[in-house]
View 1 (cartoon, rainbow, N blue to C red):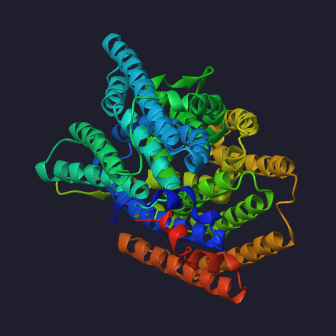
View 2: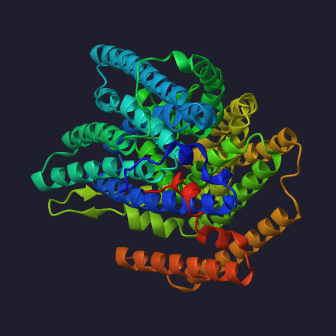
Length: 561
């Protein structure tokens, strides 16, 4: 890894603005780096989930562990990589061009404020949870709350890592923040394997894996600070950043709601899924159709659909945000960058939606399928809960494309300094999602939560598109963009037909190896068919993903080590 800082002139002239630079090359290079490292992160996360699913099962322990893990992740997405990054990065990018000392002061101010606020939140939550545990005699609820208390200290650490990642991205270093989650996953994998090797009970194992996650979150901070060595001069002299700090603060609250919609909806899903454990067996006077397995089912189904979303969808949005921020005052480059980001998101998200829906049963049974150990104890998911998990994945999968586009649209508003519009849309979508949740959980159980999330996300995409078109006063869907979307749709449908043919004519295999082999064949056929169709249809998105970034001084400011 090259840790030599670029010269100030290179740092002040981002690659996207360099004479002769091709913005699509910069975007494609960033997407490749983020996607590649995120792919490793997601595979390590998948290995972690497989181990924890088998170790903790699909009952109370599995649901309680996933709920505890969701709490710090919510704050990470809201305070770190979500709202605060979206409010901070455009302002940091703006002043970095002209006033390096002020940009250093702003970064320092945000870091110190983030540490203070998140630490205070953790302290209050820990005391509140401790009070509930002390006065409650419900063993199952207390188990869940104690696990949350163990993992809450992750929150300040992962938030800090996320904002440091945003600073790195502005400096063109996309690699280190994309690789940081690998440390977290590996630590939990090692802890889970130790539990198996040492014969630790499943309940004790939840605490051991939780403590490992907390320790690894501190390691992530060290990793990111090391990657920023020589690029930021940290200081407690915040005077030069006072006005910029106010700007970030004014934008922050609306962005919390705007960019955090999916995360808030996910947290609402967790609360409803944990209702039988946290609250009781009835809701509004009716017996709930959910049970102790519901949160494990919905949470692990989320990890499956978030795999392509995290590897590709978030990668595009992450890579496009600094470029949108730099071109915010230049209408034509801004619109071109936005179009490319949307087309890349659709090019990846639409086939992912179709493919995941088609292979939902095979992928769930391959990843979470249970088995009986030598002691006769069931490890992993039961057959009945595998069916329920596949049903939940069927609800999430159709909107992977919408989740991806929403991230790009939201960042377009934030790059323009408009945080109010996404906030208003987000508030409406949270209300829509909650209403659908309360309607659909009765007939569909936890799958109703998934369909509610997908429906509200798709509606949000439509509204964001309409309002974004008005905001930039230019048609987003020009003739070439429409042709690109049509090519993507055609290739995705034909790819889906090819995968459906494999599933239809290859008999269902009762064994794990049979399911895994059919899944692998579906993935190979789908990927091969889609790539081939993209080449035949001459889809430029396929070429964009293979473009290299610009060379020279401009490229040095967008290094991806």
